Amino acid sequence: MPLRTEAKDATAKPASSGGASPPPANGFQPPAAIYPGRSALSECIALLRAIWRSPYRKQIALLAVGIALILGANMAGQIRLNQWHGAFFDALDQQRLAAFGYQLLIFLVIVSVLLALVVGQTWMQEMLKVRLREWLTHHLLDEWLVDGRAYRLGLAGQIGVNPDQRIEEDTRKLTEFSAQLGVGLLHAVLQLVAFIGILWMLSTSVVFVVDGMRFTIPGYMVWCAILYAAVGSYLTWRVGGPMIALNTERYAREAQFRFALVRVSESAESIALFGGERDERRLLEGNIEQVVGTMRQLSGALSRLTWITSGYGWIAIVVPIVVASPGYFSGGLTLGGMMMVVGAFNQVQASLRWFVDRFPDIADWRATLHRVSAFRATVAQLDEYDRTVDRINLVRDPDGQLAFDGVSVLHSDGRVVIADATVEIGRGDRVLLVGESGAGKSTLFRAVAGLWPWGNGTIRLPDPDSMMFMPQRPYLPLGTMRAAITYPDPPSSFDGADVEAVLKRVGLAELLPLLDVEERLDKTLSLGQQQLIGFARLLLHSPQWVFLDEATSALDELSQRRAMSIFDEELRESTVMSIGHRPGLDAFHTSTIRLVRNPDGATLQPMPPQGIVYWRQTRAEAGLPPLMVPEGAD
Image (cartoon, rainbow, N blue to C red; front, side):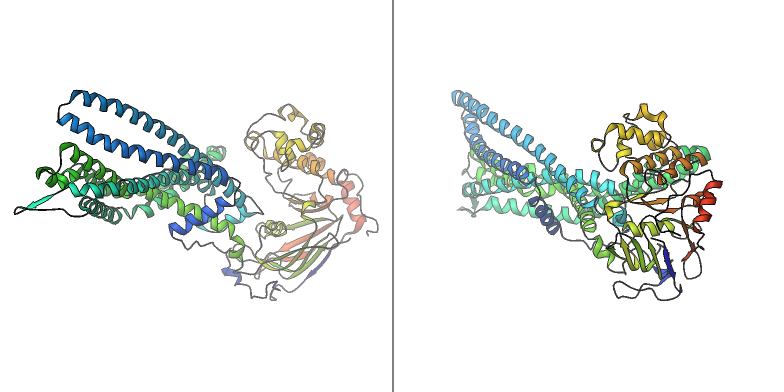
């Protein structure tokens, strides 16, 4: 079917698929995602719901239940150990050697059981970290690598920056801190439940004597423990609160620094050719200064917090003895009895001071929870963010063609790629799209691929599975050259002989010995060789619709002729739409469309039709075989 183009006035108001007026051309930017922030409880509940819907829920639940049971048994052992303290110190105070030896044997039994429980708890806790990280990493990858979200997330503003750190580093920290703090909190709660009743009863032994009057205060030791923990927790929160925001900023700065280092590593050759090491060092110094500045603030905040946490811990050594001393000096408590009271007080105090002791980790955990939750929420709601501006409507064409109906595609700086134009490309057409650099040709391809939805009008598409896009620099995944050629399918999807045949077809027979060698192909191969591998991949998959974006820019004339001849031979039935500037490229196409810049944005203008005679003559001058055209073409 011949190509039809209807170009309208570029200043006319673009047709909107959504009914809303488009934003001003000069003020448009892809809508940035904003995460308003939620409470830690809400973010935890959201993650727990995601775990419950995942296939990992059974393993995680079994580990959590196992840890809870072990902690319960541990508390029973701790209670027995506290009772042993009383008997042991009474035997010591009364100088009974036989009773002293007997209590040592009992101690060995209790400690052996507690040791086995601690080892079991440690193993389960570490396995819980592994399963949580495995689940969360897979969950984020499932949300991120789908329907072009990874590309569009990069346009979503600050939240979309450095997804690698959020998926790798933040995920690791969040799962490790969650397991540690979760188990620690459960241990503290069980410890409090187990010993607060004991401490309450033992408080009756603390007798006060005032002017000869003897009296007790119900739950005296319990109230002292609660008051001491409350003061310490309040001071910890007041002094350490800023650490949450500082940790969040630190992770962002660390991510920027790591990205800058990776960028220098990936561009080492170009930097060396320009002698740009000094300039790169200057840029990296700026990143280092930001990281160090944030760490300096964190160091000051942690030092101030240490005054509270360490002071709290040191004072806690004598607090239970001081508050229990009235009972000992009044004669109501023996040395063994006072040690039992002090032991129970320390157990209750240890559970109540959990917040004080673990606050630095809690601040770190809160920061990573916020970053992971923001990333997760943003990825899942990208489509909602896009609704703030008009969107191009993508629909399936019933005849399997490609057509632009009243389409206006907005560039990132507000320019219009196609201003209210209608283009129809039929099966078998070969269309060359030309124009000045920066006119928006690649953005048009992204709109067809669904990666750039911002604009107006409707694009009618053939079956997405029948389309294949080739950018200027083909993507070469990590692994072998065979995997790069079969991408995105695994090598097992194709016969080995077919892979070797397409590599020979594009003129890379000398690379056959390296077909199954794992290496960085984007580093070891020239850009021209990478583009030829892209054509080998194209030939292997044999799509019906091919979109080439400067796909031959690094090829010499012979290699370009060999690569493009694929569409005269193996893929003669395929439809081709190309972006290109190289001389002689028009010989491989049957029609040309030019994007012309003007004050109101680039407009789509068809070149005058040349006819089959012209194309046959052009191809003959280029030394190409006669053009294969659909029946009925002019």
